[in-house]
Image 1 (cartoon, rainbow, N blue to C red):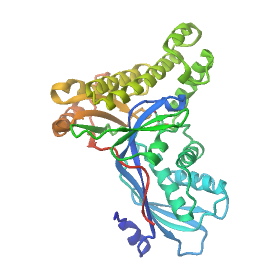
Image 2: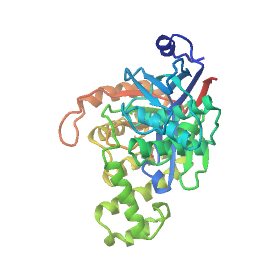
Image 3: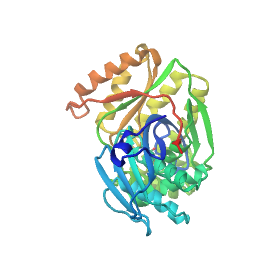
Image 4: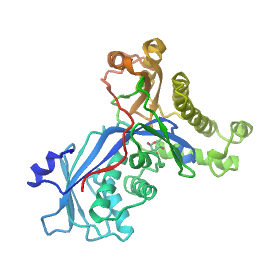
Length: 390
Ligand code: GLA
């Protein structure tokens, strides 16, 4: 059983509950979730873990010690929970407020928080934290939520307590991910299909550029607004209902940026379905082609890439089929964070070495050198949130 030694060393006794929720990597379907489209993420073998017990103090508060931030947060549960410092605690506050809004009484708790999901790596450390908190509160209060309701509660926490108008992908896969499967999620109907990915001849590599990605800066919200503008001009409820032809016909009615954002989304929804089919057929070269196409569209039309992400994709292209590389793209919201690459399993070590040495010295579009080290790891598709000790 997974242990959280931090709990014992902080609180002087073993925890009563331990729960975990994973980060995610999105294989394809980027910036499509809030356009009612399809996404194809998987949970990764990187987790946020909370160990907890009923508080031994009489104060009505949740005390959380975060070992990574080496910081402590206190949440008063005797009144409606609002935003407060430290900033990282807002994800937990938002989730706890969601339980309060459902009339659930939250007891005073002592919690130790540890995480192996990289922060700012575009691998959904925030969704992992939210879903972990929700799983803990379900376990502690005995209020089991329906998985969709749980994911939506966590998404609401992100909207209202972190200020990021995100879609539903990250929270859904952190709740519903399954070992050895990608999650094909229809973000309109919220129907899911598990797409097996357990062929031992391929692996997914996650390449963190170590350029911190940050979505609360306004660019994400602006992209979302541009997509909504495009849908309005096209006279459809969302870009899910738009076609490339209709967009082309309406080209002169919208500014060039809005046109390009919509072109990305319409193409990406189609690519996601085709890539899912490629995976069902084990047609890895085809899946790799869709991944590259997704990256170029995110770089040129949606404009959410950055020179370091582009450098990784260029290195992967140079490695190519002979080196065991099928395809690579930026993953997650963008503006830094990670790339995901589909590779031949027997080439993982060689590719990891090659990217590690080439990335730092790569010359970017503006002729400067990247100058930082990447972090590279592979992950099989992992299970969603779990109760480890109850
Ligand atoms: C972030 C958001 C998701 C999704 C991606 C882009 O990860 O949290 O909802 O929009 O960006 O695909």
